[in-house]
Length: 68
Ligand code: FES
Image 1: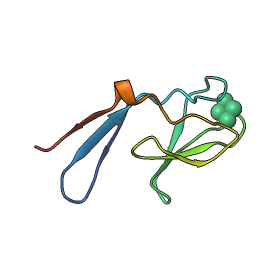
Image 2: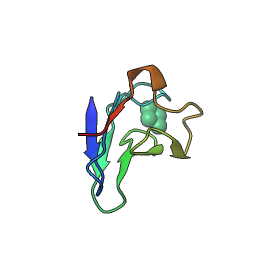
Image 3: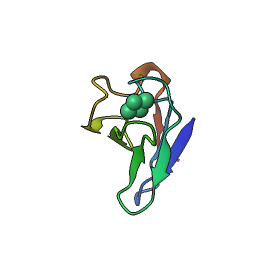
């Protein structure tokens, strides 16, 4: 799981296994994105695709979104 807390205190926890071929994503502090070291896919903190080659968002059923 990867967890990001936004400026309003909302927390986003998602599965950070890349949907392309299964590599573990790495947090990019400068861009606030989850980046894949294998083939370069990038996802935002909500799990939406920024760039491929991945074609699927991070699994939404694993997303947890709540306010404190
Ligand atoms: S495994 Fe992540 S881009 Fe290929």
